[in-house]
Structures are given as C-alpha cells and as structure tokens.
Length: 441
Image (tube, rainbow, N blue to C red):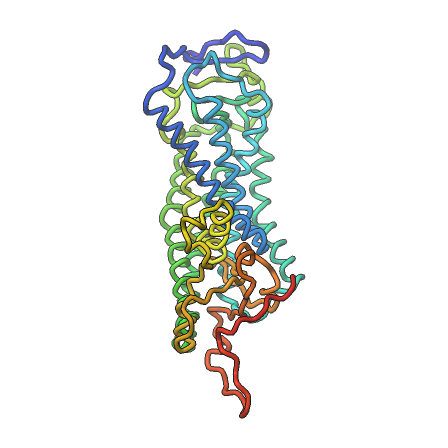
C-alpha cells in the first residue's frame, strides 16, 4: 500500500493519496451510481417515516429502533456520496471531525441491525405462542422493553468499545463511500466484530422458523371458530401473508448475506496478527503515520465495498411491506395526501381505507359495504392483545373519522361475538356495524 500512495502537501495531519486521476474526474457509471444511491436513500427514508411513527406510538422498542437505524445509515450514504462524489482528490475535504466520528456510528449501526432483528423475531415468537385476550399491564410493558433493550444494546456497544483499539489508520476517504474505517487484522476483530452478527442471524432465523410453526398451529385451532366470521378470516389471512413473507425475507436474503459477509471478512483479515495496541497506533519508520488521512479513488475500491450501502436501502422494502401497508399506515398516507390538496383530484382519498369493511358487511347480512373504521391498529407483524382502551387513542385516521367500533383480536382462539347469543325478549341486539362515538382521549 505504501508504494501506491504518495504524500499530498496539506496542513498537519498529513494526507496520503494514490496517483492523481486525470480529468475527467467522473464516469457515466460513477454518476449513475451517485444518483441512484442518493435518490434511493432519500426515498427509502421517506417511506420509513410513517412505520417509524406508528411503531414508536405503539411502544415497539426494537422495531422502532431498527427503522431509525436504517434511516441513519441511509443518511450517511447521502452525506458521504455528495461530499466525495468524484475522483478529483485535490478538491476533497479531508473530513476532519465527521470522519473521526463516523466509524463509531458505522459499527454501532452494524450491531443494531442484527440485534434489533433478533429482538423483533423473539418478541413475535412469544406473542404467537402466548396469545392473550387482555392487554399488557404497564409493568409487563416495562419488563418487555427492558428485555428488548438487554438484547439490542450490549453487542453493539461492545463493538463500539473495540473501534478505537482496532483502528489501524485514522480513517480512509473513498469516492462515493466517503469515510471508511480500517481495522487491524487481529483476533478481537474476528471475535467481537465479525462473528457476533453471524451468530445472531442464525438465532434470528431460528425464531423465524419457530414463528411460522406456531402460527400454523394457531391457525388449525382457530379455523373452525373463524369460519363463521368473514372479518376475522380476512384479518387472519393478511397476518398469515405477512408472517410468511417475513420468514422468507429472513431466511432467503438476510441470513445468506450476513453469513457470506462474515466468511469474506474472515478471509480478508488472514493472516491474523497478535493484538498489540501500541503497534497498531504507532507505525514504524517508512509506514504511513497513524494520524494520516488516506484518499482512495474509485479505481482503488472493490465493487462489493462500493455498493454495500444498498443493503440498508433494500431493507426499506420489507419495512414498508410489513409495517407501512397496515390500515393505520395507509390512512396516514391518505391524510398527508389530503393535506397537500390532492383530495380534489382523487375523491376516493376522502374515503377511509379499511380492508376489512367488505368482510364486515358480509358478516352483517348485507350491511353497507362502504362503512369504514379508524381504530388504532398495530402493524400485523406484531400480534397484540385486545386493548380495552384501544379506541381512546388517536391515529392519523382519527383526523378524518371519529367513529370507532370495538375490535376483537383476529387470531385469539376464544374470539368473542362470533356467534352472539340472542337478545332477551323485547330487546334488540345492536347491529354489528352500529357506530359508537369515539371517547375523549
């Protein structure tokens, strides 16, 4: 590496770079990559905003933190790509301050990506295996969040703690990738940085399989009870589709990619060197000083390392599918579109989105099919218990319609009101679609 780098005359600390790239400093492929990564990162962050808001309001710590982590990673991609967008090394900003902090943010994000998924899948496996008709108490919710925090934070924080001891060079700066961390090829890098995400991904895949097995068992036990209720059937089918897609997304792209990256990193760091903090941070004569900043043009960056930023971008797709296509999320989008004046061009935006309204109408013997609800609905990836106070909380949809009927848990074996008992003589039972005033928050 030393023979390929030369000292660039700048203020202290020194800057080292490869041979100057002749003009033009960009290529069509480099420009296309810049446009795609910036555009898709911004788009991914926008589609994740509504799921993030809903999950935060519902108290789902691991899921909200997972989406927030994806947003931070995509923001890093936008900033780094725009700051160092071509191979004109002489015009580059050395990245003082920003690139000193970036390795810690990067390693924290890598750790949170895997641990948050593990906490999400574990929580869902517990919910599917222990369906209950009453909501969690405040103490139970506090205990659940504490357990999730103990799963999510220790490994990423340990990874952050090892960042400085393992830093071989102050930092690298590359075209489009921006700030980059160079690790020392020692055993702590394998033990504390490479292996934990791979092992955690295996545990996550195990929970994904367990979820689907338990859900099939629940479906078999509730099939006869749901056969007489079209609304409950439609909700169960939507939950089954989401769970199936979630399991496939964990087992197909996530697990192989994490394991492949772990194997590739282990191969790249060989041969391993003994861990010596003094040797890592004090380079010998003739070597690049540890405090120097190293510039890398696009020709010196591998294709895989250049495009690894697309993993958080692609992750926004299942986030939108699992969390951003629920009834509450769709109604939030509808409210936003109405607020910008699109209701005149698209009159159907004034109608509240309710995928179960048709099934509800069928179950009520020909009731009005355009009846809609605006109840607070936790995304179907999470299977919540019935909350007796669920209608006292407001979502985006409550801004349009304040008529909220009571809901039942769509998957609980003891679903109530499937076959309501006849009303006493002289009394009429309320219509299943009778509107009730929304209680004050």
